[in-house]
Image (cartoon, rainbow, N blue to C red; front, side, top):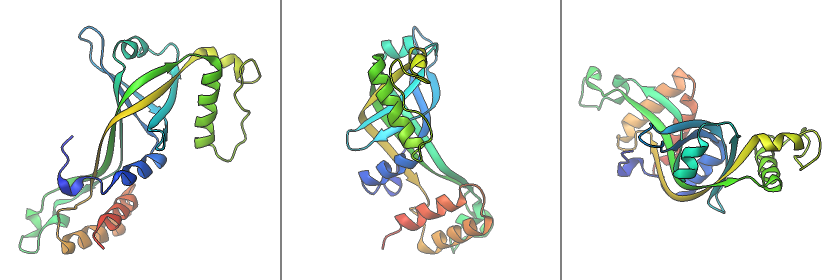
Length: 210
């Protein structure tokens, strides 16, 4: 992923906070014996204090042999993406039709070492952490070994702890454009009000120098 200086995170807190609310991504694992990589969509929970990600997958998932053979994996998350029409980006000295169409987006790629969790009690703890994250209002029984309703289902999954060993993050929201052009783009996003336009506009406003 190409990361220009103006698209780089302002600090680690920027991408860490973003991951706490953007918690669906794709786990990429090298294939076996010349196979293509496995790409598995999944929900996950990121713990910035420990530098770890927890998630789980069904035991029959075909990813497991490859993951055990190649535990160095990448978790890729992309969101807040919008298309920016060319005229929005034209400089003051350009005709509007000479502006460059582009994409704005936020992306974080975590390089990780995967650790498989098969102990039933550890899997129960991992699942409870995920449910607490995604369902803080409660309403579901706790997972406990040998107890209804979920204890009998533990054998059908395997847990994953992903130890983060490297991070590449990018927030591409017109950072190299002049203040005039950025103001124009932000205004057009507000007017268009399409899916993710509001999120993209918030990134632009947050990342502008005070």
